[in-house]
Length: 207
Image (cartoon, rainbow, N blue to C red; front, side, top):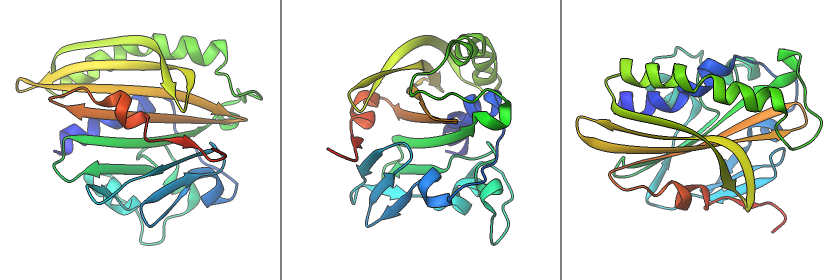
């Protein structure tokens, strides 16, 4: 199961590491009674009784990352672990959100659209992703650059299919820009491709 979850953070690790100097809950979101809300990204999603929302320390532990008892905002958003992670009770589907501060990279974006440089970066790392999946034991790895629908809008992203011991894995990631922040929203499922359904759980906060 650790390998299944670890594969979700490969893209973020290849993109960059980052830290924020802003209000934590506004940037990385908060969870109350199963409702995840992120004001910066402008989305919300409800995860019911069939879901488990992992704490940040649980996420870090599952991915082999040591986190302090009172993690700082920089530690929570350094690209080593997702800022949000929800897993179904049967461990067949998972949703994660990772955040990158493009300002730290020196390439802040003002609009919501991903700029050409980031778009090209996504295409460039597809080969590296394929190698990373293969090294983790996945077979029949296929990675496609695609426009992914998220909250009714199209965003640049990546679609991955692979197999782990013969069991199919499906992954779809949308890369969303809000000012200088890049949000990578990833849906992954095994056996059946329900990635569109998983991403469809998110709604705009004003709707």
